[in-house]
Image (cartoon, rainbow, N blue to C red; front, side, top):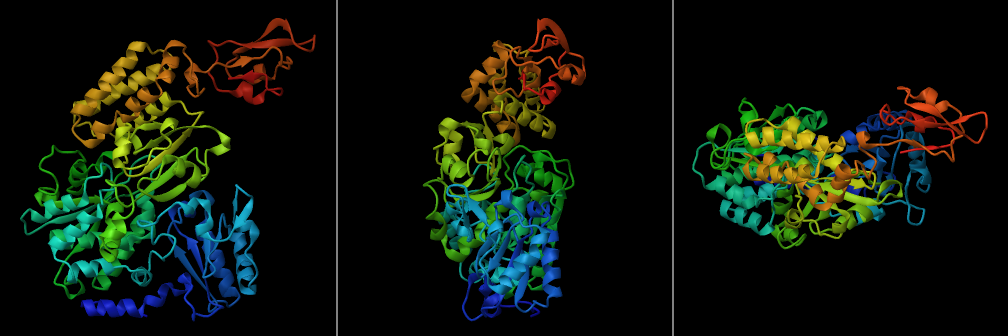
Length: 634
């Protein structure tokens, strides 16, 4: 049914009632018809990379060829979170959860569904604990300890369908703010919810909104920071791809409360699918009177435009972002004034990230208590993490604040790949710190992470195992920060470069114990003197690894040894004379002729044992790779 513009609150309520059946098949409502099924296919960037669009096309083709359109509906949805097992296909109302679906699986899944047979065993998730297949999503260990608020619609609704969004309580929060609550009451609800900014430092959302609300001005802005730049982070991208209407509704609610009339989404151009979904959602809302003039007949006027970033990490800092939107160079400015006082074009501006705005409609639709009953005393609600690295279940997870690292890494993440030992986890991206295994039972919230030398950040969580060198990890994050620094202030521009050079010196086997003291001293100075949050937090990976993994630094410096065997300059290949058979393969394969024969004979008296000249060796590993008896080791 074509939608007409909503011109009043009454029309909105009528519309919600009229379209409440949109999710009935998915929710298993009786009376729809036993033969009606819905096949929902993940359509996030991650699953697209695993050919989910081809999977969709094959389903569509087979359903049409067999004239099954009345019995089987086909739809797309956002990220299910279980990225390790994508592409994911979910069957409703049976709630059958298929993983790693390929295009050639489509015909037999459809045939199985039409026949009413039991689910296909080879497409179900198999629990490694008991080797039994699991049919339903909620029974899979990956989901059992999760609580979905920010991701409530991802994997459920079609992200391009306003009807499905509204049928799942979409815009109920906005209707309450427009017609039920005064701005004072709305701020009080937000305050009672305990929502803190999900973009980094965790500043109370209500305080930021209240400042912008109270600053006088006939023109104000609401800005969404969608410039997600942390290595390994994909939380905001997945939300925008899977639930764009929720982000937009959160921005409209913010605009109503602070009395803004213009909105901007600042998003990196490297997110084409998220951009496409947001553009479609904005167009749909304009068409139906939920953006533009006189929204829902309330007299409120507000519109949103998209601005593209070029991928500069520093533009995740709110003042640098604002400078970029204005057409200038993305550089941070001194605060105060804060953007809420004087931001975009010197007007009062509220800046929050994607996940923050995404939580807002839930709070105003369900009440502050529905949110603040979750989490810890000072960190309410849930947090979305992008779980990546040396973990079995790579994916997007949402857990209550206060969930321990152990629960995230082992119960949800399935433990470390290949049975390796857990060594550390990096939270908060380049701005965060490396948390050692000794803190694995730490409840994750804003304050606990800061107390152990890390931070929440936007939600990246990179897991490391025993094979990771922590000195090398610190160097990796420093190299990222050096590349991404805007160069405006000396502590960040010069100080981080010096930090990187010292780390490079250490990983090359040229470091001294004095270098460790200099790393600590310089890192502390940068934290205290850099202009913006990026610079102030950039030494965290160095300082945290120095604190918790100092013995690795000392081994690099005093023994010229990398305990994790990761730093190439410190690697040493040797040939075990007890194993070597003198076949000469290693010498022939060596690209720099670093291997020669010795006078000592091998097992075969006609052959000679080989040795490696460490000065010539370039640590390429070719010899070890080709040795037929595995006599060469690192």
